[in-house]
Length: 306
Image (cartoon, rainbow, N blue to C red; front, side, top):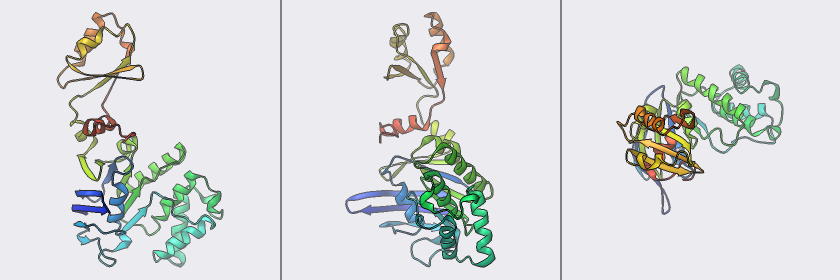
């Protein structure tokens, strides 16, 4: 449905996207995971046709995106990272403007507004000024404004930045419903837990380049270890350290050790070692590796600190 081929975008001396190629199939919930400044918003603006690349091509349903008349814009919906609402107008006035810009009139516009306020859980606030809304309420309204014309393809550029957990879950549930109904979604985020929860495929992007691409399971197989075990750095666990460094990677952060066994080293061997030292199992927490660990492995930096 969407194809990017060798796309490059520069802003002066800064290369925001560097030779990016992607294919996104109809019905996917596709994630762009990366830190601020990685190139996620630039990619969104190029796909939306708001900017043009210096090199490469972008096509949607076989039609080039570049150029105002080259692709049917009614197939696209864009949820920008910055709230795109008029604070001095009511919620209904805001959505009416966006609906009319998409060609909706009369009964069709009224039906779209009714559906939007229901989806945003804001039926009782439709005549309230947007400036009186919380950040989470504005985010939900910002989302449904992009859906009034029922697009087939939705671009969500970090749509949960700065919102409360309740609003974040409401946005997640609504997006998942849309995707189940057949809408293709590109979702950018720097929160790994969002990508893990929502996306059927994930691309890790940094400094304008795609570092890794695949399902969550595919991505995690790129790590040289299959499990992480954390335990407190205490005199009781100190005798473990010399033996563990021979069979894996051990790091110490904030008073805790993290052990990542090399592929093929069985956890049974680890717990057999701890048992021989008289250390109870409750001291150790075993967990699956995360996208945070993969980003650290690929870049040498934590996702949050990048």
